[in-house]
Structures are given as structure tokens and as C-alpha cells.
Length: 209
Image (cartoon, rainbow, N blue to C red):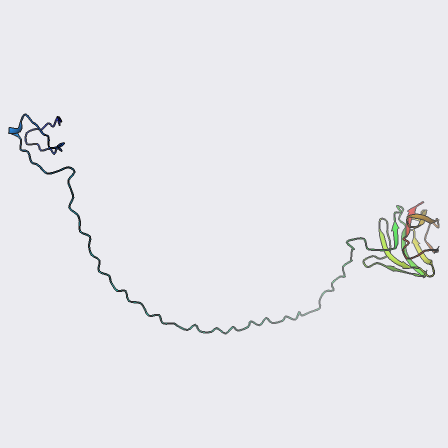
């Protein structure tokens, strides 16, 4: 038996759900019992509204032609400077790498002497682009020479402002061929080199004595 234990006050109403229709009360004379049906209550179905399709008209598209645009060129006037233009100095070209050469002139002299110039008298010596005389202390000049029947003769001019001693070393393929000590003082002399070919590397160096 199911015991529901439902307490009611006077004039109070309560809903109870019974299992299998079982119900018993000791005070049924003082209560009004109403049967509301089965549990859970069955809801009445809600009718689905019927939808009436609406015809959507298809809009007509009117094409508007795009006007062609004609581009007007912009003319930039050329400006002619007035007045006298300032002279632009010619920059000094500094070679970025050691070129191919077979004639080298260097100066490691520390008393202020320098090589004013070298001029071939037999054969030819052509200075590389970017190099020029004088060859001051710490400078190196690169050139190409072409001997005449295995001989190369050239005049060399030395300037010695301090009037101190110096020497000139001539090397062929890194081996000393001649050592000259013409100083102190300025000197213009001729150096003769015989028995050379184009593949020989000649080095002229101004040094301390």
C-alpha cells in the first residue's frame, strides 16, 4: 500500500498523483476528491500552421553602361637652371681589389722620401686604372710591363725632402735582383733589367737604408 501523507488545512487544496489508482484517507467525509485523469497529463497537440508559399517576383536588372575614362597625361616641365653652375670636383678612384699585374712599385721608407715617377725607356710600363704617382710612404702602385727583347729599362725619380738616406730594391719573382743606394737627396736614375719575360713579376721598393 502507498502512503501519501498529504496534510491539508481547512479550505486548502492540493494536487496529488496516485499510483495505480490507490488512495485512502481517514477524513474523506471532510474532503472533496476530484479525479483529473492519468499522470502525467497528456497535452493536446498544437496544430502546425499551414504556410502558404508566396511568389517572390524576380527583379529585372537594368545594366547601366560604364563610361570610358580618357586619361589626360600629366606634363612635367623641364627646369633649366639659371645662373652659373658650381664646378663638380672629379672624385679620386680608389681600387677596391688588387688587379692582375706584373709590375709593382711600393714605398716602405719612413724618412719622407717618395717615388715621383717611373718612365720606361726600353719596353713599356702601363699604370693600372685607379693608381697614380707619387708613391708615398705606405702606398703601392700596380702596372703592367712589356719587355723589349727580354729587356726592360726605365728612369726612376726619387724625391727626398728630408735629405736622408734611402735605398731602392729591385726584385724579380720575390728574389732581390739589384739594390741601389743613390741618396741622400733627390735622384733621377736609370734601372736596367735584362733577361725577363712577361710572366716575371718585377717589384720596385723604396726602403730605409
